Amino acid sequence: MTRPEKAAFVSRTLAELYPRTSIPLDHADPYTLLVAVVLSAQCTDKKVNEITPLLFAKARTPQQMVKLSVQEIEDIIRPCGLAPAKAKGIHGLSEIILKKHVGKVPDTMEELEALPSVGHKTASVVMVQAFGVPAFPVDTHIHRLAWRWTLSTGKSVEKTEADLKKLFPEKDWADLHLRIIYFGREYCPAKGHDPRKCPICSVIGRKELFD
Image (cartoon, rainbow, N blue to C red; front, side):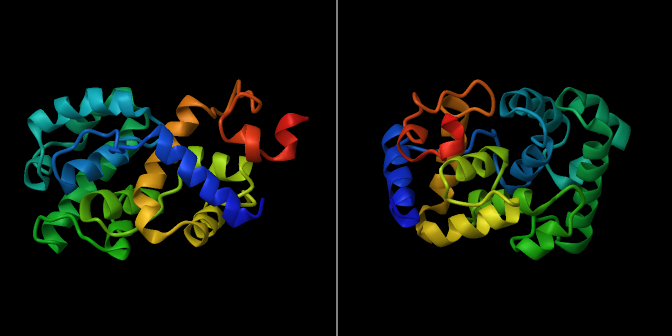
């Protein structure tokens, strides 16, 4: 198969397995989504969804968050890991949203990436999920699977994102981003993966997987 043919096969297979997609992080608005995505760095979505209700019970807006001390935030979010840095980032981004953006989460990649603790992937997730702007956030699952399926060289996350954007229609990016994540967790994990039993790797998997 050519690379475009492989991409079409991946798209069809994922759509059949996951006809409906929804972001696995519980949130109510752009701000609570932003905070949840920041917390999800090196943490499971399940754990984030256990912690955010505790945090949002005390502060679910930038105005309320800045009234908490960094230490108070850190104490609540500690189970998510990297708590000192995340707490400082959440407090800092809340201050900037209030001072520079009239209390509203900015809706451009440039402004989002300028916020503390907000990298390209986090900004991409917020853009597509909160504002409906086409983006293709690439996490470790997507980076791994794009390499396994020979859709990208895997040299960098940035290269993987660029390759996938060329292969898939813009209108499908939001759904594909989530479908690949779900598939990676269920069928194509980093460890203990049997490519012969994988619905996609068994058809288009990189040769090295079978050695």
